[in-house]
Length: 465
Image (tube, rainbow, N blue to C red; front, top):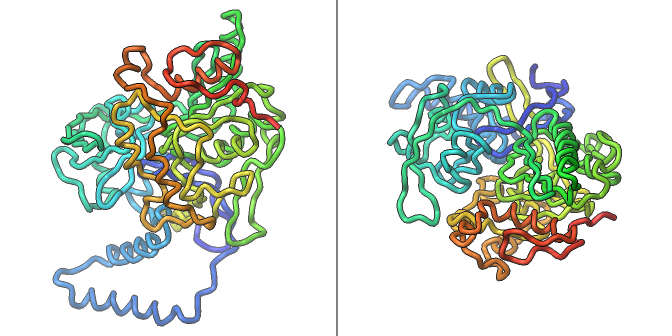
């Protein structure tokens, strides 16, 4: 499809390998008029091109110069607008198709270094112990600093079964260390569920096709498991931690499972007539769990579509949001093919929660902030966690987020004093999840099980209008 007065391609699957991004559809009104003063600037660009071609010390390929100009133009806009050609376009299309071979990492460039946003749950990187906030300094002994991020990503890709050695610098540790990871076929289960102590835990790992239906199926299965035990569900934990986003339609569908009224999310761009509002009971009719207490777990790796769900359920008082402040990506990208071999991914809109709040930069602040105490390095990594506000040229929130507000994420909470070592002795491997389950058990009038801090007040979890 040519870039012109035609509609954009249909919705694409959107857990990108190199960033926490949702690729979403939008309409276009055609090519914008060129500013009358731009002609002189275009002439300057052409003059520089001629100077390089005539005088640079080595011959320069035209394609290299043109790609550099396009990359620079898009990079000046925001971190999520990109020109895709060759391997970069192929990687995206492979992800859209549903699987690829590699490590299963979402990474960004941070001041010249490769920084992990999150490992995909169940991926080779996750199983090898790679964590959000880690810096990858070397690949197979070769330093990757101030190099093209695509080059590092391509190096990490490869045939399933082959291995690569990563040198990791982890905040909180004094020395880097090596981890050898065997590449695998990344076919992540978008939704998994488990019954724990009469509480259903549903983990959504990516917002790909049919996530809403998968979660609906999971709820039905959890009810059947509870019935076979002769009991009933006391509540649900919806785990969106380290979920980098995906389909807007599936974020709406997932939210709609638990809502019976209200606007879930709005999408607003430059042209008011193209703004879109997504309302409850569009996909599912009514709250499928009839007001059952619900906790949503989020962290710094919860981005985009994850933030849409958390924001909707928070604003409409249907769930308690628990964990850490989210990533803060409140923009919408459209994928625009230019020809068979190239495309543009362009930021075309912002999205807003039901209350009109933009999560851009600031993210979703949890109702109950719960640190991951079972991970001894979590605090140090949290202080260096990559969020949207850390990315170069990120969009500015129109509400002007105060940096001091973001700094509160690093403050200690006096309620949480138990050490990782003590939790390990008690068999607690995931403090945030244990805390959420205990909170729901207390809401149902049952005693807490494993956590050391006092859970939320019973009754505060079911916050329906």
